[in-house]
Image (cartoon, rainbow, N blue to C red):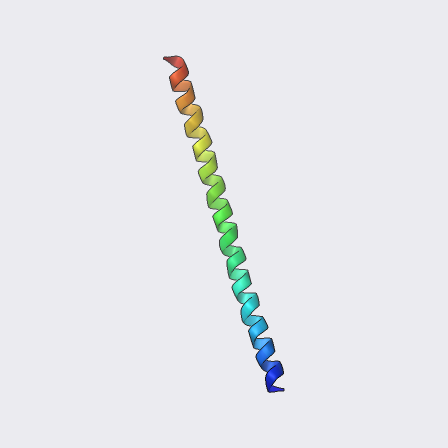
Length: 53
């Protein structure tokens, strides 16, 4: 009985940590996508500025 409770506790902690990692990964993906869009916009603006000269 005690071993089963220990196993259940370990599984619960592992699931919570996995959920936190997935949440962090989701936010990292969102931040990365925003940074990529900003990079594209800056490249487009600089390209147009260079083409005008």
